[in-house]
Length: 305
Ligand SMILES: Nc1ncnc2c1ncn2[C@@H]1O[C@H](COP(=O)(O)OP(=O)(O)OP(=O)(O)O)[C@@H](O)[C@H]1O
Ligand SMILES: [Mg+2]
Image (tube, rainbow, N blue to C red; front, side):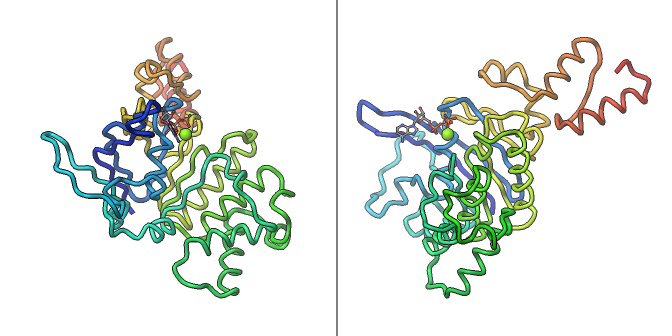
């Protein structure tokens, strides 16, 4: 499912003293099949944007009571589509949308609540299903979802989610989202708060899901190394606008502009810059593997690296 946003704006608490413009005329396309990274400073609108994609935040035109207003001159039409779902329309089945677009919030383990892990995972399925599912169907889906996130059903299914380790809790929470087999999986800061090994395992899990269950994965991240290492495409938000939409390989060449926005660059990009200042130009995709390959190729050519 291709995601298309055009001229999307969003204001929290409009016409009040707390009014905050969180999105300001955002246009962004996320192609099916991407492992897409969204980055940007704190408060730049990343979470507000992704929460639109599964209808958690809605366009006024999709609300039942909305009456079409006459457009002001020069005002552009807002488009928001995920596959065939038109999120600007009142006719859209938002429950079906939420089955197809899974959303994992920041620190999702705080939302675990049921008595057992299997009940927690089953909740997501029952909540978004449009028909009554048999106990067998639910059992099978829960088993598959736990296996997909690398948790052993026999070991965890009947445990309280609160008795799991930190990493296991996060996996269980992700299982509760992917249990509907969403085509698009969106995760807001999925690796936040995990130790380096936990982060690596989590990214491996997301790549496994990307290859098997979820065609498109979108992550919000502050971690430039994580974006460089994992994403096929990325977008940078600043003050509610999209300022870049580029593959990480191109994005991290723009280090001066990123730094002007108060953003960091991956370690590999810093190394390329430092080597460049010493006359050694390393052209790589900013993954660690790509960096090493590029340096070795230079060495073979008899360069100074
Ligand atoms: N529920 C809310 N009520 C009012 N204002 C909000 C709300 N959520 C976000 N905002 C404001 O909207 C703007 C965009 O916030 P958003 O949470 O989308 O940014 P973000 O890029 O996800 O930031 P972070 O990196 O800190 O998670 C900010 O100015 C924020 O203070
Ligand atoms: Mg956020």
